Length: 209
Image (cartoon, rainbow, N blue to C red):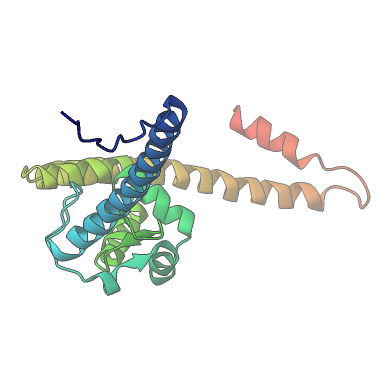
């Protein structure tokens, strides 16, 4: 009985198997890196899109509002609109008195247009004696749903009392300076031209009387 001769496939060598496996690993690694980069970009874009379409409240007590991507401002644009420096905007963000920025596809900070009014509010509050830490605490209270109005009123009253005390002290200094100037004029009229009148020494004498 004659046996049919079949074709025998040539088994690949162990060296070629290892080369193919390594090639597959390199390709897989490259694919994984590409997928990771694409996923990171997708997350950034998704975050930007979400920030642009949803009502924004970043925990600083801001009212809800809707913005489009085109209306998000760069740091320099926001700073120019508010009349402050870029560093001031970043400092306000770190302190928590303005909404946190989002990053666009290029990694730049972006802020909604409503941040302009927040910065102006902060500047006005600073002008009457509030601190950034106090304002950040007030905005956090707003964001948590606890009205900070009575705390704000109490802070304002304390600042007014401190200011009244400082005014009393400044008026006392003003009166002392006015009296000192009068004594200097008298001393200068009796001091020969070209000689020392030692005016500052008289200030020390008057403050210690």
